[in-house]
Image (cartoon, rainbow, N blue to C red; front, side, top):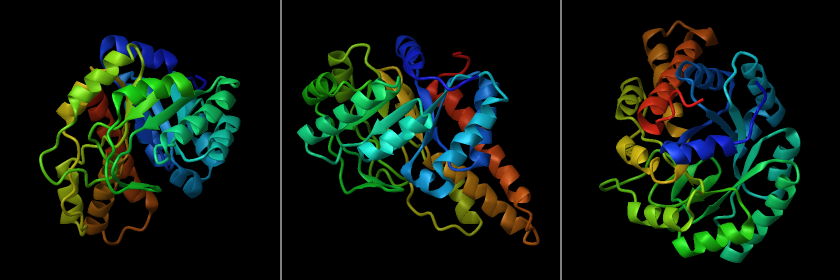
Length: 307
């Protein structure tokens, strides 16, 4: 099945109160694990590529890997750029065959964010490509995205931003953060803020970044086999499931996949120190990705059997 855009996915997700998973991909095993999980769950899927992934694997390599995966399934799959920091990156991805791009002007003043987003919207829409933007700012560090503190999305500004920029979906800041170290105290999301934004933008698809849950079983596994991941805490999954019923149609997940992969690779190295065949440790890593994604689809996103 060819790549698709997210409009129909999000329309149904909004109506039925669930979210579509947007999973970051970096290599073949991650793509395979995600695709296998979504195929078994019969779930819609967004595969997203960050700036770091484009540098690591190369845009053309990732596209070809995804195209190969699509030959094995009839799933609806969106190919999405995650955190495009300027017009040139977004243009390169639109021209390269992406069906959705995110332009991240959240670090810019309000008017400059609108201007950048509008520039990307005009180019992408002329070529049938969806545009996600961001208003507000998430704290934390993940790849090339970093900020010292969160700036929550203002509901009134969100309405003006959507109207003036023409973006198709909007990533908002309500308490999530990038990376594995999200909370020092109790984890909470600003649901009254989300409720207000959703009410002011009825039917409009909202997006949640920085939404990994950082499962402690994988933190503990990684540390048991030589890792040093201390104090990592994520967003409780029940909060994410609640957000998915309040207008959040896309939830980004990256850190949890990395943790599951790394913990399982460390386990192989510790238990089989003689192993040097990459398949020996990448096979269980791929299975860990599949298991993680299946769990998210069933219990967090709520999008199992939604195609």
